[in-house]
Amino acid sequence: MIAIERKERLYAFQGDVRAQAYQHGVHIETRAIHSIDRNNARYNADGERITVGSTNVRKDVEALPHVIAPDTHVVVIVTHEALKSADLDAFAGWHLVIDETPDIWDSQTLKVEVEATRTFLRDNYELVPVTDGRSYLKPRRALGAIDQVSMTNDTIFSTLSTIHARIQSPSARVTTDLTSWDDLAKKTSMSISSIWSPETLLAFSTVTILANAFTESVTYGLYRSFWPDIEWQDLARKTVRRFAHRKVIISYYVEAHQIGRHFVDTGKGGWYLQRIAEDICKRIGDDDHIWMSNPANMPFLRDLDGDAILPGNHLGPRQAGSNKYAHVHSSTMLYTAKPTTDEARWMDEIGISPDMIVQSREREIMLQFACRTSVRKASSTATVCLYVYDKAQADYLASYFVSTEYCHAETNLIDLGFAHDVAKTPAGRPRVVRTLEEKRAMANERVKRHRAKAKAQKAKAKTLGATNLASQNEIDT
Image 1: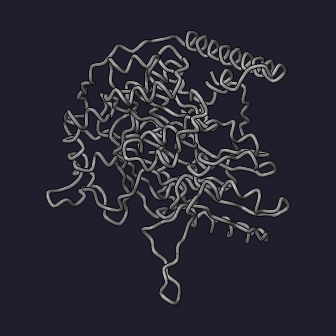
Image 2: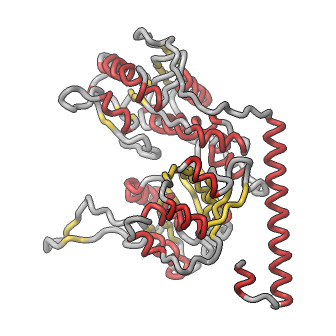
Image 3: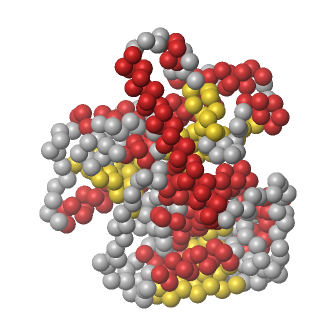
């Protein structure tokens, strides 16, 4: 099984697998599992509409070990999301390859101002401390009375249905910034984060993750923090392809601050983006440029007629793996993905720095986008020109391209009059600064608590199983 990031690339990836197999004289059966794409209709010779895709991806993935013979040579291609949603216990003997770092962490903030909702949460979910400021959300009982489908169809509970499914799922760990349900009476909101557990992958014979700078990602940091017993083997090796030497010039426009959502939305950041886009227009042509930005930045990157200021192909940020634009020699990335205050605080508590979040969410996405250009073409010697907002982004890209040993990378400041402006940041609760030793001590203490709790639970289960004296109600309680 191969899990890739984007559904849009499934069939292209499937074609690549077949082509490489053919080059080696091997026939491989391939399958692609994805949800129905209702935007791209297909028709047969009689003009009848053909439904392409699965009506239930999770069930189709879970059925694979039961419908494919163990001795069959087959490659099944799914998305990261399909992999995360399925029960994978039956995949003994299978091998899994995950292309690109999987995003195992989801977060959102919910407003909870109605007392009936607070009562529902208090009655059905337990808060189990995990750090000084966060708790696990656990079901108080089997919750058989709450039907998942009914919750999804219920207009009032539809938002909660996804969280409910994750809380009950064995493959997810869900936390919140509450330490007591009484906290909701004061703050009327709660942040919820879920982490996809690597324990769901243990059935596979091997699991290989193909990703750049994986050990510097938030995913790796979370795995090391919550599952410290997992051992990771580095399979890094240099490519066998010989790349011609080329120059990469990374231009940036701001030196004294970094791009952030708050500054763009409430400060001069939007005006800066407009000036930057206008400058880039003077330097590149329509046919030799790809670019991306946050959707929230787009109002600042359009003219009065609503047309994009920047020339060339406007793409989504996540374009990892695509070779479609390998003929293009220039790229612009006006992008930000900084953590919220709550996210940064929680990550700091478990020993993950805010900069690691930025690197994983923002700069790594930008790097993958930059690598869609001719820099990925082994025979190309053309100079590649990249445009980003700030110096930190430019330095990160330059560091990577220098490490390839076939790119000569240099950074270039373009001063439009605001290169040295300092951005004001929103006020908030002072951040707790801990030393590396303190963070390690906290992580070790958390591991001890988890192991002690697991040991106590096993002892309790053994006692209950041996004596069989307790009633079911007593066990639930």
